[in-house]
Length: 109
Image (cartoon, rainbow, N blue to C red; front, side):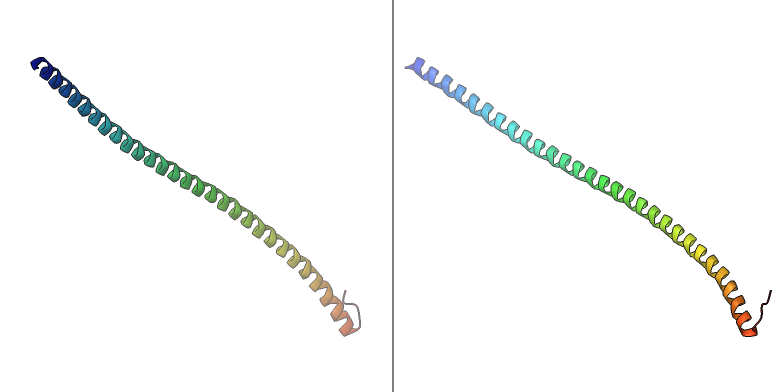
């Protein structure tokens, strides 16, 4: 009887030890999962921020290219306006001379 009681007490102690170890393992697993979630969230946020920075960089580059194209177009338009202005000035002088000749009825050259 006594021997059986000792065996039972030994088994109960073993059961308690296993339960205690199982609880510790469960806590460690839970802590690991919490840490993994936290690290995953941080990685997700880092990737998100990296994406935002890349988007800003791409948009900035596109805006710079667009700005350059606008500047080139303005220069081209200004050059054409100047060219047309010179042509018109030359034509005005010719038309003015022709008009004076018609009014005077004679050549002014």
